[in-house]
Amino acid sequence: MKRRLRLPAAVLTVLAMSVLLTLSQLSFGMTGKAAAAMGFHVSNGRLLDANGNDFVMRGINHAHTWYPNETDSLADIKATGANTVRVVLSSGDLWNRNDTADVASVVENCEHNKLVCVLEVHDTIGYPEKSGAVPLSRAVDYWNSVKSALTGEEDHVLINLGNEPFGNTGYEAWTEDISNAIQRMRDLGFQHTLIADAPNWGQDWTYTMRDNAASVFQADPLRNTVFSVHMYGVFDTATKVRNYLNHFVDAGLPIMVGEFGHRHSDGDPAEDAVMATAESLGLGYIGWSWSGNSGGVEYLDMVRDFDPNQLTPWGERIINGPNGIRETSEESSVY
Image 1 (cartoon, one colour):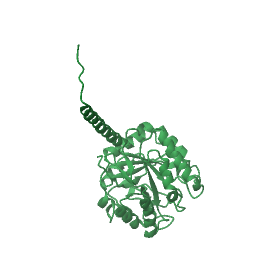
Image 2 (tube, rainbow, N blue to C red):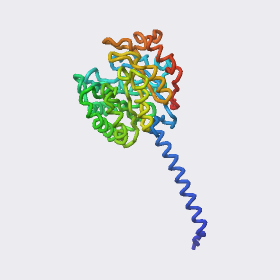
Image 3 (cartoon, rainbow, N blue to C red):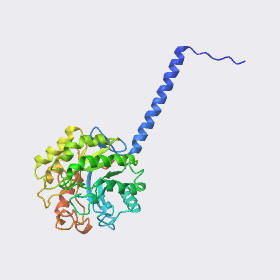
Image 4 (cartoon, rainbow, N blue to C red):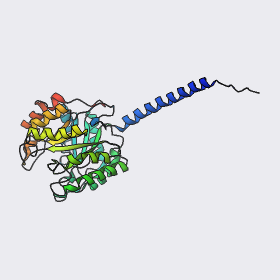
């Protein structure tokens, strides 16, 4: 008959503590890996990459949905020193739909060129003011339809829910609609960092996003939403630029400039202030746009006819100028 070994109580206590410590260490390791697997995430008002390092976007918008054959543009954009590209997609409501295979190709192209990929669906622009534009709920439908191209890409893909989702009418619904869109994306299983564009054609002159950003951020169960303002004629002085961006920083809320230019039909943007303020506050900016503009705003092209050897004055300014992309961009540590 075997005798049972009876250990002193003190020894049992030490063994129990050792087991608990080991389990705690394993749990911490698993949690760290899980967090990394989630990809980009927000912490204390800052955007961090999948390795937990601070990431500041220095990027360029690219009109992929209108120029789907200009696939070399991402490599050309990378050559400017940019660490991010914001890619225009369409749900098929205003322009030709970018299907799952096309989105997957864009994502692969971004990764190949070591660019953080901000994908946006453009068909929400100026809703309901713009004829044919669609609500944010329709944008969520689109993201769900191409979900298979996005799942597992959270370490280098961010989802910009809908471009400039309200014009200058109906914008009062922005807070509820963007909150609902975020919650629905999470219910559908999207783990990505989400980007919420401001209303008023992205410029938030009514301060609807500024004054409601905190509640929208709380509406995201993952607390992984970044706010994006577009700075054109509304932001025509350095004071306006600084006041707006500092409001978010002071509130501990993540903010970026998702579009801006050096000229526009609605006024003269303070582009130097946008770039200098973003650099001083450590905030991201993405200039509009690489090439292909029309309808009287061709001056917003950074290069002529998608030729990287033909920089325009705007391209020279944002790429090679003070506080520009080449001077301030740092590649994400995920690459």
